[in-house]
Image (cartoon, rainbow, N blue to C red; front, side, top):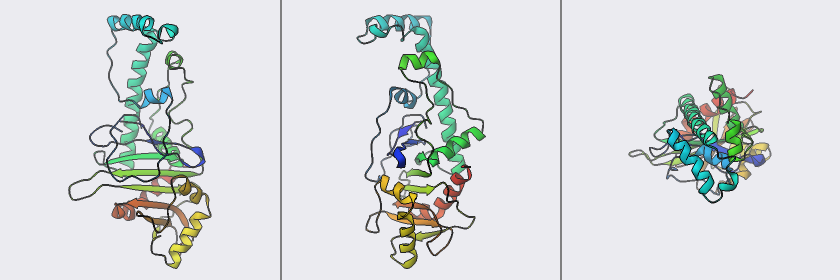
Amino acid sequence: MTIIPAAAHSQTQSSVALGKAAGNTPVAAVSKPAEAPAFSPVDTVTLSTEAQFTMSSATRLSVTAESLAQAAAAAKTVPGLDANADRFTPEAMAAHAEWRENHADYTGKVRDLVNQTLGLDADRNGWAAGGAALTAIRNLAEKNALIEPEMPPAVANMLQTTGESMWSGKSGGSTGMFDITFLPNGAEKGGNLRILFESGRKPSADTSLVDLKTGGTNAQTALSNIRASALGASLDSVGGWTPGNAANAYAITNSMDGRGVVGMVIANGVDDDAKERSANILRTLQGLIP
């Protein structure tokens, strides 16, 4: 399972990807990104040392007396480590190996839980969440008694971090983004689905999708509604969208007249999935946000 940094979200929120792609593992495993059409533009996020360790692929490390002795020797001989030998102690390195394994197990369980809850295919779908969507996922994990392992103080000292949670600085906010990547499958081509929403705009049991490319009155009303709200600012932060774009887009509304917009979905090659699944995914995510 992998944590993969994704495009920056609105209000400077970044996103965390959790999902499986191309037979590898994607919230906390390093997997090869799915080679499907991607949204553009995409910002890059520079990872902290802690994040790089957290997001690296899970590997079971065998800690023995011999390996501890080798680690102690390395701290004295490897350039750059000799000055920090007091931090790179055998005990700290052993604690890091154990914490990393426990954290990989936790993020794998979170990934599997989200896939099950949203009906995603672990072999075909990769996904990323930001802002309020990530808050929903964290709440889902906690409701199912999945608690993130705390970083031991010795490990935090070794990595020179504060040991903050992997959710820190990425969840929260009034808007949310949930991206899904679809790998090609037989006759089905790959593609991407991006759902944007405001946490304060709750979808009803009966929602409708308004095609924003049609140019009709309902489409114009819905697009104006989006652009005049926080949802529009969220859309701008991920590259924007206009009826002239190659990707199709739909407003998720509580009314057919385009006025009750609760979210928006941008579909790149997966329109059927957008029409059939986006509203249910949005309802599920919103249901996890107080």
